[in-house]
Image (cartoon, rainbow, N blue to C red):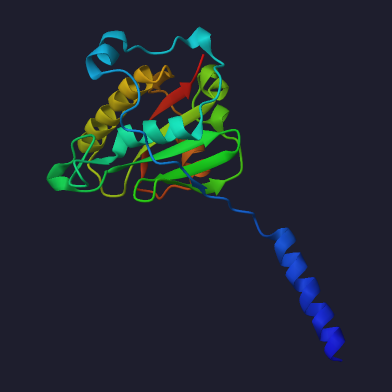
Length: 205
């Protein structure tokens, strides 16, 4: 009797392991804040990657960590941000990372990518063919309750910081305003009052 129960429990446990999704968050390496060229040199050579240059090569986890920190990182010994936020509040926009391994939500507190799904949805993020060809697609989403003008200002500052950080690290970036909002809402599992704003395509030559 006991052996039969044990077999049943083992079988149920095995079935649970098979059917349950294997979520895998990614802990990013600490950003290297002293990497790359100086800011004025980066400004002088800052540019958008040409559409004809895609597909580009992938970037490393270290490079991704550097770029995400540039967009919404804590600096000044934890008392401020790399971009302006009113009254020292946390970022009003969330960055999602799309690549060939799935969909991830960037957690700036832990410098971690929280897995949303294992589906490659890059080509669904926007109507331009280069979106699906980009090794990494960053999606900027206004958080719940964020005013539209505030969200757009924050997104502009965040994407510009990524441009400068990417230039200093010999990484290519391209700002894309054309998105497929319906597809992104589904893929990112957004709440009704969370709004996708724009994309940033990332890769290397």
